[in-house]
Length: 390
Ligand SMILES: Cc1cc2nc3c(=O)[nH]c(=O)nc-3n(C[C@H](O)[C@H](O)[C@H](O)COP(=O)(O)OP(=O)(O)OC[C@H]3O[C@@H](n4cnc5c(N)ncnc54)[C@H](O)[C@@H]3O)c2cc1C
Image (cartoon, rainbow, N blue to C red; front, side, top):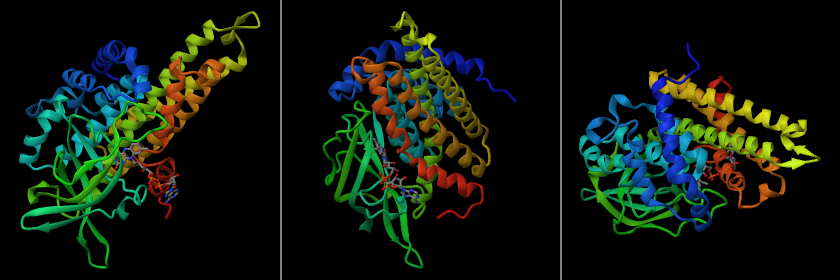
């Protein structure tokens, strides 16, 4: 057993860090201020191969040279300088590419994956609705089969990468019928951008992740071919839940990047800032908080990469689900605490947007919400222990 990433993964980390420092870090504050989604940087991340880390070579992916652990390394490193671009990568691969790769037909994969893997296109994942978030099975969006076409009506909300200039499609869960006993049959439909009746509404005004693309979506008599069904009819909900297991580990990696940023910024500031005739890092009250950041970083990173290694090794689904929920819960709650500590270390400057610590403080909160809230993770973990939690 080893607790270290491989030499290849560490080399890969260095190359992503160089890219992030050069292409993202210098602009992140401006994009945040302007609520600007930098499509050119998405394309550059594509050119670096970041969207193809879990995809086969035939679609332009890394094939045998990539794995889920590499994706987590990339998300961590991008997230260390900019959480918005980190979530853009996380959602593009975990929620955009992954469902098509896993459940798509040969034709669907050939049609959509090359551009998504190249970073020339993005796909959204439309699960959440105004009345169905944690309770995602309560979806009201409907798709009815009529003359060889699905006719989709409904609404989705908070959907990442769903309305950018390069978004090529969203996958949407919809009720496609009723099972015996009156339970909804839920399936997944691919809706290409530009289909008449499909609108990505005005982007949200969010607390954080200002440079990430998030929209409400509406569907009014949207017609797509019957062949746009993704995976088996009636398996849509199960497919999305499985997609979210991987996504949770990737969100944990984003949280690790956030904690690393908090540690780096706090350490530097604690060495520079003088009070009472010396640097604040000499005061136990400050030094001990920074020590706590180090502990949270180590523990979160270990949980995250353990879950990622389980994914790569094909661990039993039940074990992986539990590891993913544990990593997501611990790393994201730690990230929120870490940003509070870092902001405190910076004192009044921590409250000013001129230091990135303020941006990380705003960005961190959603980590405890997206891809299953902390409460949902606790519910899953308790169920994994055999407790009959509702
Ligand atoms: C910026 C952003 C981007 C997002 N991107 C996407 C995306 O790309 N695709 C997508 O489909 N969704 C996306 N989401 C949606 C996200 O996954 C949901 O917001 C999240 O799952 C919570 O759902 P909700 O907002 O409806 O909250 P609710 O489910 O209404 O929950 C409200 C509160 O009640 C708690 N709660 C609910 N049920 C229980 C229970 N059984 N036990 C204990 N507590 C409970 C919750 O934990 C929460 O604290 C995004 C959200 C945000 C904010």
